Amino acid sequence: MIGVLGGTFDPVHYGHLRTALEVVEHFGLSTLRLIPGNVPPHRQQPVASPQQRLAMLQLAIAHEPCLQADDRELRREGYSYSFDTLASLRQEIGQEMPLLFTLGFDAFLKFQDWHRWNEILAQTHLVVVQRPGYSLPPAGWYESRLSTDPNELCSTPAGRIYPFAVTALDISATRLRDTLRLGHNPRYLLPDSVLDYIHTHQLYCRI
Ligand code: ATP
Image 1 (spheres, helix red, strand yellow):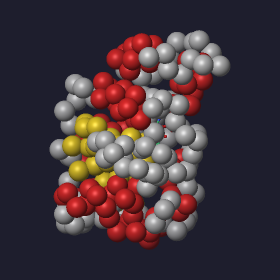
Image 2 (tube, rainbow, N blue to C red):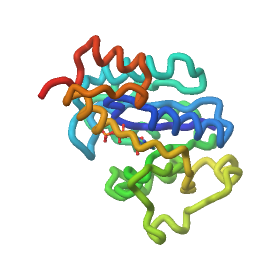
Image 3 (tube, rainbow, N blue to C red):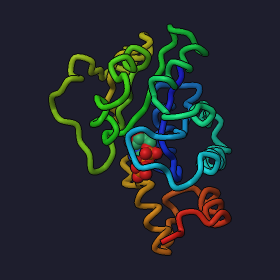
């Protein structure tokens, strides 16, 4: 069973990293792949280049073997649709292995706008992690798919939606970029290695 966390990672921060590790531990995963998007379809385009975002991710997880950077979306032209990413992962791992796609409450609230969202649920489970400032509506389209039993996800390949309370870290890449642009110090919100990279490459400092 493997996990996936897609994102812009512009830049990667402890909100992403802590979430990834807690999903690994909770479900007993051998690996979770962090997959930076090339051209995100649902949002403003990233500030750092795809190569820079991948490099920061690699620095951030260098000492954590259960987390892996996966550059498949950066090797693809055009929009980074999760549907395509999951289809290519399925080609690698086959149809039977349970797959856990992790996303925050904020992303899940817009999930029905995603390209072929219904088919995504045929390819993977969703682990929906709490994020400060966001909550799920008590009822919704997803109710019939809700699960609170990790074993249920481990024993079927796809289709369940599992809300998961991770350590609440109110960190966002947007706020980190603003902090840097204003010349403030974002240390302790992201790994020092990533911050060193940001300073070396003078990222996020333009007004
Ligand atoms: P931005 O502020 O630029 O939108 P972000 O901080 O939301 O960036 P993304 O790379 O867009 O980061 O997020 C990738 C995934 O990680 C999304 O599913 C998002 O919900 C989740 N995520 C991001 N930050 C946190 C956090 N602090 N806690 C839990 N999940 C998070």
